[in-house]
Length: 86
Image 1 (cartoon, helix red, strand yellow):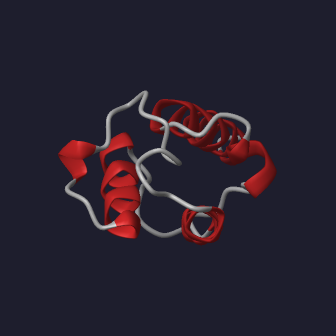
Image 2 (cartoon, helix red, strand yellow):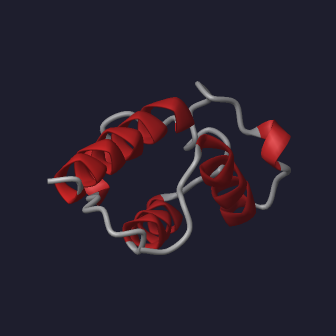
């Protein structure tokens, strides 16, 4: 597994993908309105999947905001950690 995925690391990744400062990405901003297109979103999903969790573009596309994406990632990381502890 690679580096941990946190809310702030996701914010920084999104900001880098669309060429803005991380502080310009609010937790509940619509990321498409900020300039995130589907190609860049798929690239982010692939990047975060490298941490060992299974993410799909479809689940991330349901609600295109940082807080929702982080909730999905956090839930999957917790499930992964719970499974590793068995």
